[in-house]
Length: 213
Image (tube, rainbow, N blue to C red; front, top):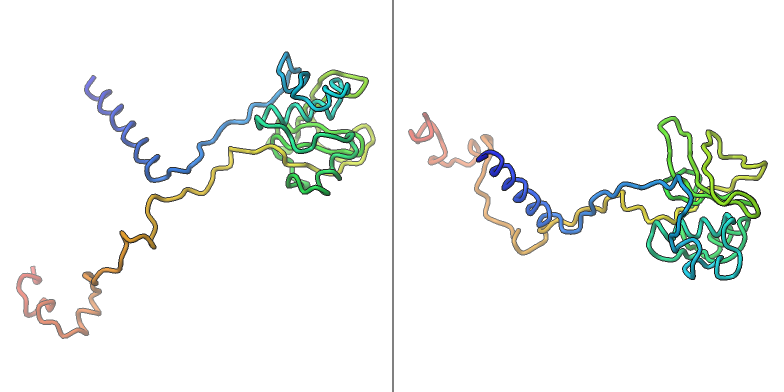
């Protein structure tokens, strides 16, 4: 019992030390993939969804992608208009989000007439996406080993709209070398060579018996 209490106290103390020394450290938050259809979440069908408000709600790939990014980030996406083939260029023109060819969790996969969300990336490179289809399926998922073609469409790349908190920020240390706590101090440690060259008899083990033990 005493050992359990001791371990608990040590755990609490360690946590306090970490939070004090690294106050801005962001602890990893696991990405939760959506592999099932939305079921009443307000991001997809309510006044929160820019496409639903104008009569172009799901089934619709842009309405779904808009809602999914809203759900992931907790704030409305910057891309709030246009059809699927325009999202890639709207983002580039307005410099809303970073983009590229590397798949990342929560990224918007863009084709010439379709958008979807990256939900999982396997070690072998296979990518699972979640999506909706205008005039078709309300929701489905697919896994691809090659994203270059989706129903024969041209693949543009990925828009990194998801604010990924799994990537930890650089810790901001409580004290820095330029702080006043680290003012230059008088040197108190010397190498053996410095001792030999300084002609300091006090530091000479041949003349100071306290050092010659």
